[in-house]
Length: 298
Image 1 (tube, helix red, strand yellow):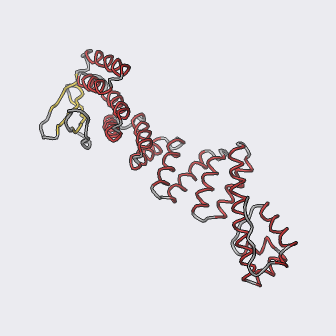
Image 2: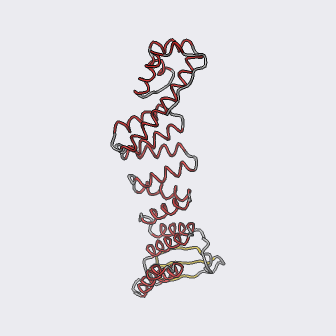
Image 3: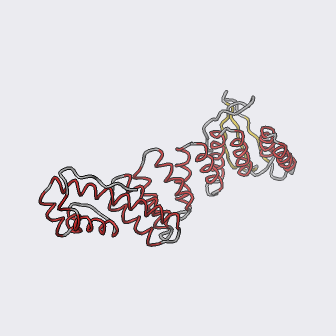
């Protein structure tokens, strides 16, 4: 028997734990009120009365009577309706009522009823993500990824949520997994490049942005990568010029072999950035002032 955490329900409904078990007599849902009393309902699978409550619940939803519909689904469940489907319908209704935490708790109960079914995990992930329940979103998306290793939406939600909670390295790992699953989708590489840039891993960021431009399969994404790459080039060239003022040895190397000089110092420019640096070294490096006027990215 699996116990689920209690949740606060609307109206006059008490606090409950929900347990699911199998017995020789059929399927059971045990609803244990917070006061400790046990109410055990046997769901007779041969009893068709539950169909009446399912239909009534659907009518109540159409009429906007969501709380009443929840009650009807619970009655249908007690009388033999599929508990998994009823629990998910109730979860959806609680979300519509604005009780997201309660909805997530019903998703958890459904997971305990049928652990191998994906629907409850998908619903929980969507509800948790939309309601700002970050822990729930991480839990559901992580489980979904284990069950469906190539399910892209779960990676997207997991990566976004990890970034929201400050786990940038986790978000990077998730983005790298997306790139491995769909290497030709430029949006995944743009996201990974932006995360690398956030962490100060300029070389890795430049590599991803360059690859996005090479793929050239989405004009909007390609344009964003071009802008990001140009900004990184200007940022690094400003640092290079400042270093050239402070370090005469580096300045001499820069005037002779610009690309090699900047690589030795750990800089990583795009081809366009190298061209810009070469042009400056050929035409303006000799006139570099003591305090250089830094370039600006327009």
